[in-house]
Image (cartoon, rainbow, N blue to C red; front, top):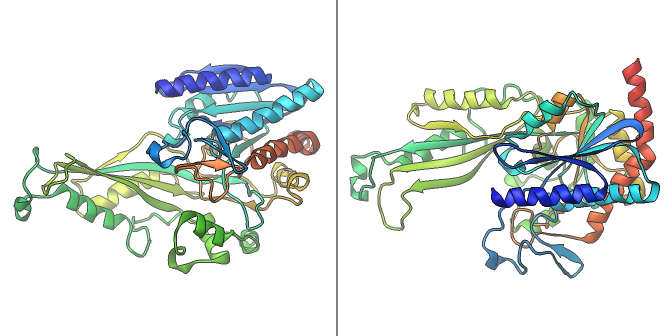
Length: 427
């Protein structure tokens, strides 16, 4: 936590030097930093960012120190360059460039930077709720996602929600020799059997009622999804996998990743940890669910708990971890979304491909709920950027283009968006 406090102060100072008014909101976790600057027009854009990054893992796997920037073969290496700090700096430099060139901004901008994105943003909601009534926000923009087969970043007009859960099975009060496994419950086996009731080998999520609120894509969305393609060959090569589940490809792969919720098993732990045969005292598993519109974290958590009880796993402790939020999806025909996609033309040679959701989760629903504004997210990283692995990297060109896209949005299209928004407000 001390490192996050230090990073927060560095980020706040950077935002201040760029020309923003800055306030650091203390929480019981990592601080949330707010920066703002009024502009010539009353339209206000909120930029969501985060300064926490994935753990670097073993430093021996890195070709450079993970927290020291290094440039090699036309790429910038360092933890956070592709996910978190890099996109934030690209946007701050774009704002600074506008202020240096014109002295003012075309319209207002608010920058919200949290330090607990990877934990599920447990303290962000309280800060947003506290400031929601202090000023009007007309649109919210995050940074996240991936690119299409041509390398253009996707423009998403929504984000999946997030629920994180820990399941714990308890055994004897002390470790026991493995020979007693014929007469003593092994908590690790109990946990494995419980997990098999949550998701099967067919990849189907078995929680009773889990899919009840999941709605398939409408006609317009189905048409849109059929036009989109991922660069599957690059993905497979970068990730070192032979293929996608069930040999999915093309439109089926796009539709699956965009429209379906997920249940992921991220870790297993036993106590005590040892390499000799024995019966552990406890076993736990951490699960995360990426939810689609109409699914609510609290409801899914309740469904999971009741599902395990009904299948005679009432001894399994089901714990909802801090940090969860609902999914959100703005209308694809929102003026802001349309102008955001069009802003990609001068930067990438064509409008940005638009998708309703991606494979990521961001707390954009908190912004939409309290600020009543459309939300979007722009991809930055590439398939091989290694955002969660060693040697995270991105090209300087990708970061420059991310900032340039914000410049285009603010200088050439935001006025048009503002006019439409103001007309709607006075209608």
